[in-house]
Length: 512
Ligand SMILES: [Zn+2]
Image 1 (cartoon, rainbow, N blue to C red):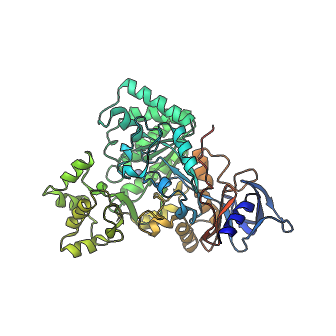
Image 2 (image 1 turned 180 degrees about the vertical axis):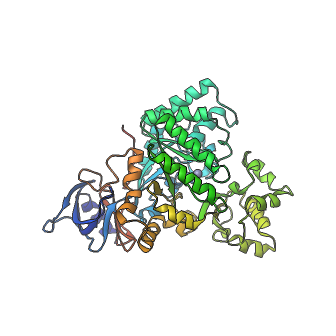
Image 3 (image 1 turned 45 degrees about the horizontal axis):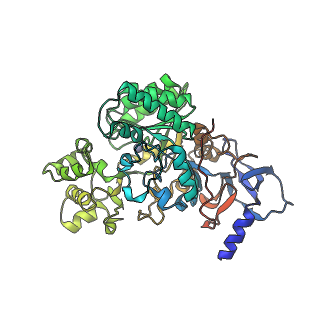
């Protein structure tokens, strides 16, 4: 078997023919029947090559052939799995060939002081041995380490800001803003594709508009993408969307609102936000991303009252000893019940993974709020949970929206102690399934949302479309199941199975 794989990969380097498939090229044109010829890492030709011989022939009869999917809101860097699970096979198996990190204000570079403190909300520091400062150095380390999918990153606002203020929560001085602008420019000149904010997080919530505007203006000047985790996804959602539209208008940046989800109880605010985005979309390049599931993925500390989220981990752990904490949890999370929360990751207490809150409560003879406090204590606030706080009917309806992009908003899950759950491991096949079953949009529109649109927002002009000279990142799927995946011309998934090296991905560097 091993010999077969080695020989297979070796020949696949030269020429691959995907024949008899229905081409969905990513641009939104209706599918058409054709063969795709791949030489080395590029698409060489699209047409009829029935007599052509190739080292590897994939028969795609009855299947769609599309560009590999681009996951423009991915968490594998946040959780450190781009290093600990470098093949990213749970994404390969979904047809994903490019993941984009650095979202929600947190990126793995640049690290001015070499510290990952801004990432501590997601990962424990032991996962990654940091031996870089700049974006360029980080890319070099990642490429040497190897990765199964292509990786692109934005620069996280909180990552840079917390290094500048050494963790203090205060306004930046004039000199600090100028220095931040230089750091951002340099990071983009080294290949970062844009800039992200995590304004909903306690450390960034008070960031003044003027600071954001200056930084997003630098992003726009460097032809980058701005993404934002809104200041509020609930009662002040409309204000947050207005602020985002304003910044897009003031700076001219392409803008993507991250995980724009209809939170239960705030559907009206969500619909008002959608109307604002639609209105602005007529003249501004503004989009939103979301996923087709009722669960959000949260580091568990995000279920604390906001007032308790600002301190260090140690402060948070002492906050949960307060006698009032249970009442506050119930007040903040009215949908907290036995089935609303599932433990997705618990590094110090893996026996809890897969458990629902109701099971933990029953085992300990306590209320759900008390069980949540137990979970926080038992995992030393390091658990990651799936929390059902999304109105799925509203979300499904918005999957078809012309300004929506579909994303995983999750890390890879293979061999990393993470729960195997559709929310974490099947976003893209599940999206295709919904599109087919509910006839949400034509297949060409669905594919465009996960290929060409994210590529053009990022400014990647040689991926995301099936076209000669473009990189051969390709997903072949039938009945919404992924059958074959090529990354840079190499076959990584064949008939649904992993067959490649798991190292065919490239670090993508912005060039213009
Ligand atoms: Zn976020």
